[in-house]
Image 1 (tube, rainbow, N blue to C red):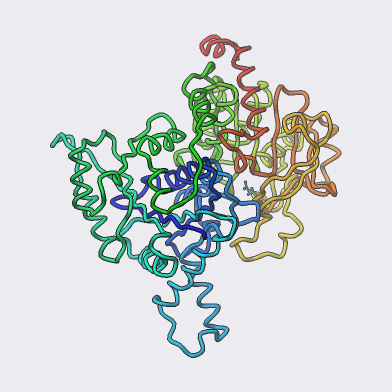
Image 2 (cartoon, rainbow, N blue to C red; image 1 turned 90 degrees about the vertical axis):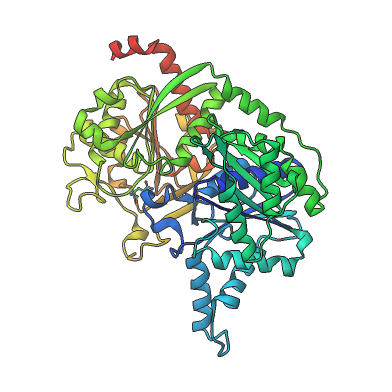
Length: 545
Ligand code: GLN
């Protein structure tokens, strides 16, 4: 029988529920258990696909094409749990399902209400991932306890243990123990209040994970235990990690979290073997190189907007024993200050995906600079489209070349709308989404990185390389080295006559793991390390460009 773990958060948002849930999943998998992860988000959007990265951070795309919350990225990086459309539900989706049923007359004249109809629908999605071959489903409830929006979700997880059996459910509450400088102590009151609110709606947490910047004393833990009605060993400290998110599982293990869960749920689990994970941390803590990579995007100031890209760079850094110092560059700053000023010292330049015209010229200028100076370049989705525009303008002498996304009447639309997109008017879930196959050209850098001919990568776009320009690009020195298997869609371009200039229409960052870096990120970072070694220390290099 599948057991359930519910993870809620209290006191403040951004405590790292996603990371903690992913870490729990990783530890349980490591003990030989089969785990599934799921996130329920209390907002009305049907999915985050229509939300600005400023509001919600990156949209994380799954193989099946669902556009999901970025916490699912943590789940995939930490575990092997397969994720699908059932791994992320929002209030909007739940209501939509219930309202559609009501319109079909399925409620047979009943008054449709939050309890029981909405909560029943939530319980239905909670049970969807349970299966014979699944030992544990971990469900993270987005938002913070006390929010009006989260209430139906909390009510549903409370009810769930009545159906599934209390012994088959564990409630974990992630909370904050702030340190007050003036008082010189850790404060437990916000946690007492947050657990108080949970208990008011009938949920007694089994385990408390306490985020704190300082270690808690025995007395502080005992106080939390007493006021929150849990045994002292159920008060788990998760001390802030300055260094890396990949340390989180280790701190949970120090506090025996995996063992407490296994015991509470009566799971048949094997011993923990964290050798691989410890090796990874060792490589991370003892880099041999330090390299600088510029990520030139529109949302530079927003740390979550390119989350998976920063993570994938770190993974490749772990592989090459390189500490990656990411310079988050606002592409408009390049328009104002010039590429030389901002990028001259960089060992690599990455232009990520995006939408809309703002900052486009800065991205194109950054790409010109990387191409002309031989700086390793990786373009992703919009980054590839900008590389194509840059090449057409500056090498192909097509001065007005552009993407049809930004100029409807350019004489040279080198990037144009996908045929299947021409009649689409709805914005939600209508892009070319999810896993699509690509065939690679022998002898290309991409083929060397992947080590095979056929790959599958995740997409999220409406525009594509315009096939009318294929021959001109090939002749001009930009090669098409990856296409859809029927050859109709361009997926990867390269400039063979450059140390490392590769750009892809898909999103490789969604398939990188710390223990298995993505081949293209590994190739890019490897080229950046090589450039760094060739160019010598930074000051000399600054002179050499
Ligand atoms: N805006 C571009 C398109 O829709 C690129 C999308 C992206 O970078 N994800 O094709």
